Amino acid sequence: MAFSKTFPKTVPGSNYPIWEEIFLTEEEEKQAEEQCKNENFKILDESLEEARIIAIKNGINTDENRTKLAIALFEKRASHLIFWKESKAKEKFDNKSK
Image (tube, rainbow, N blue to C red):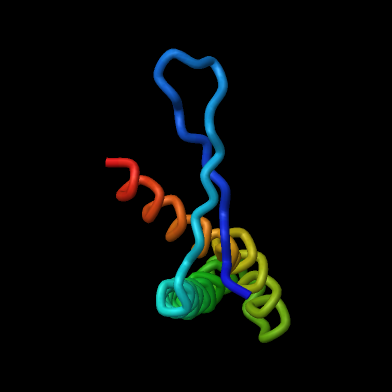
């Protein structure tokens, strides 16, 4: 089933928008998923390195503490796959509306 997102489209002379549903193609979905995966990999790698630095700086440099710090940093920064798909759909909507 294709991913879809509904966006409001303003109508001149009306106070009410028309809601337009945007569907992503299979290729667009795969592109969003790949971007998400690459970004999450980068964020996780950065989180692990920063967790090591924080643990050393604060004298809590154990595997367990570094892991907990890295997970907390990653969860705070990581985006969900749905965000990437919604962003792609919004981009498609904006381009269609021009």
